[in-house]
Amino acid sequence: GFIIVPDKINEDAKIKGINDTRKLNIRSAGTWRSLGPVETFEEGGSLPISFQVNVYCVDQSKSNKDILYVGTEGAGIYKTNDKGLSWELSSSEIEVTSVEAVQIHPSNPDIVLAAGNRRIFRTKDGGENWDEVEFIDASGYVFRFNPDNPGEIFCGASNGLYHSIDSGDSWQKVFSESIWDIMYHPSNPQIIYLLKNINGQNMTGLWKSSNGGDSWNQITQGWYQPENQAEAVEHGGKLGVTIADQDRVYAALIGDSKEGDSGWIGIFMSEDSGETLSLIHI
Image (cartoon, rainbow, N blue to C red; front, side, top):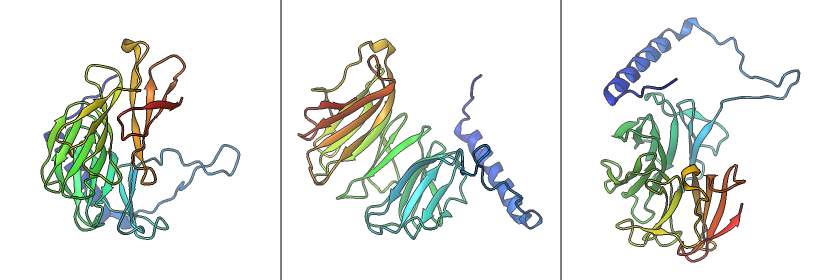
């Protein structure tokens, strides 16, 4: 079979129809009550098995540790004000098919960005109201605020790297390849690391900027090269840095590049801010 992805106009019309139906159901909800099931269990046992309760992304506020947001496969953005003891649906006014990324402003927990439904959404009032700020026509994988200037934001998506310098009001496209992850150096925001598809190849590459994203250099020393480029498989990866050792960078990659990978390429590490790397785990 195949899937026909609607254009923005048709998708907006569909979302409006879903919202209108949902509002109608809310008005008539008094005539209905849930009869269950409210939980599923293993066959013949009592172990709860809640299939398809998938959380795609989570972020904890840096300025108020009690506040967290999560984005779910089931199209909801949920918020907690008590460090996860209780949760409430924050995105009831918007209809999204899934939420792939969520990020809280580093100093103002009322400002949150979320990616879903091929769009970027933003709230400025702690999740009470959400506005669509950009239609990127792709899945958004990650947001990163500049820690020294939170008005500057990067968004990595399945169709490129997006950059905003006005707190998310407008976005410019920097790259057109899949962006899997972005990470700032722990103490120097001029240094940024980027996991990106290498154009025309079935593999992920590591890029580094030393000037805040104005220019980027690909890091190749110690990086992997597929044994058979035509048969290589790229599924992306994640980056990691630590304040305890500020020039250390980790990159975990999934996919297939050599015999025996079986979906896991390995973990690479750099101890010189990404200039050289070594494979430390396969």
